[in-house]
Image 1 (cartoon, rainbow, N blue to C red):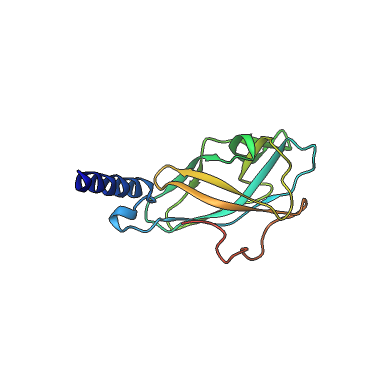
Image 2: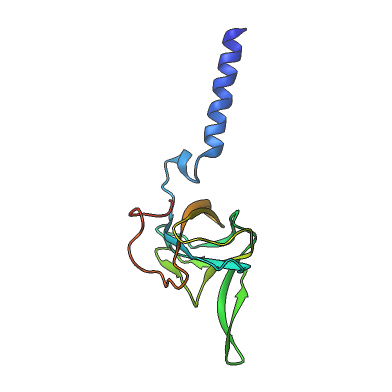
Length: 166
């Protein structure tokens, strides 16, 4: 009986590890999506919205796209861009963010970004929070977002040499 319980526990443990492995891990493939320098601007106490920016690099040979995002810092997380409408720049929700094969796409102020709507608390300079990006091909990739000063424009070095995930 003990042997059956031990082998069943070992099998269940192995199944859990396989289920939790990143896309491609069980086949020896490397994750083709690299997310670097994920950051957000600090927000005033009264702000109801914020945004995250980063660089998405597709090292694979097939195009991919971000189809959703999730973070616990707000009640709603959307993919956004800025578009000129009647001569005025306006933010708009978009269904996905394409990342061509072998290319990098930069999410930055005034362009593509991840929007946090109905913030649960202000984003404070120096804090970090997890953000999960859902790619159509690569699956979920979770990164750490570093909160910079309110007027930050990005750029600069990664906080830890690679402030994202693969």
